[in-house]
Amino acid sequence: MFKDLDPLLHSQLRLGVMSILISVEQAEFTFLKEKTNATAGNLSVQLDKLSEAGYIKIEKSFRGKKPLTSCKITKGGVKAFEEYVNSLKSYIKK
Image (cartoon, rainbow, N blue to C red):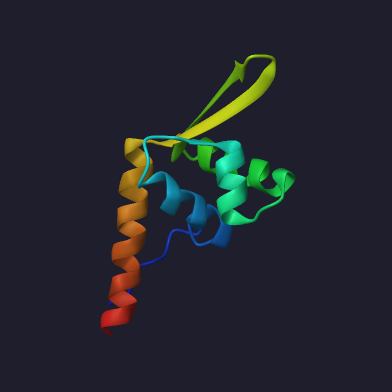
């Protein structure tokens, strides 16, 4: 029996962000933008969606006078990501 894939994580960019965040303590917006090759606008929208779902936490601060946005995965985000991966495995095994 196939498990449903989380539609929020099924987006290429959101899945990419989650894949990065699961392996680091936190990541800055510029790092995520560079690693995913996303535009700033698109990445910002997708980060907001992940944040609204409770999958990531976004922290805004300043480094000197420059704004700094950092993201980290939440416990709920880790659980959702692991369930997504396990759901994918159910498709691969069939």
